[in-house]
Image 1 (cartoon, helix red, strand yellow):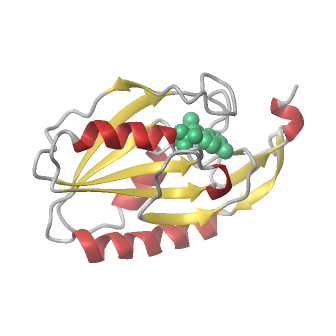
Image 2: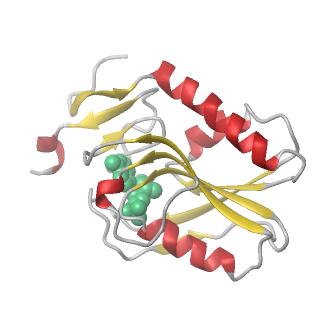
Length: 181
Ligand code: IMP
Ligand code: MG
């Protein structure tokens, strides 16, 4: 694949991603095997991570998705989160694990958790591939984290910049010039 012009460098390689997804799957299995958890991915960014993670899990589970919008093609959260697609199945009494690509300010997950808690799940936890802890503004922290990363805008492995680069097989850092124009 040709090198995308807007990319500065690779932050997490394909091999590192695969190894980490395996580790996360072990942790998830230890807690959820036999509990038929409801895994809920946050669209669109989580779809690659979700697809890889569930194929490492060898026990009963269900898959669902929620879509939210907040960035509207910017690289900084507007803080205004809107659910544009709700999940399709009832989660009352279920062990819910939310699967997210990245937690940044935390506004998105705070908003989603607030809504889902009202539906009385048996439990509600968060699994994020990437975490930018230095940027957190909401009172929320993930239960499972793949990588803590610095405050830089990343793309690939599901993550986009203005809908581009989701298909890259690694996580790369976007050049500042690409979004600070
Ligand atoms: P938060 O609400 O600020 O925590 O932002 C969470 C959402 O913003 C994630 O689901 C991502 O879709 C998006 N996001 C945050 N940081 C990045 C990034 O570095 N690259 C791509 N998307 C990001
Ligand atoms: Mg996004």
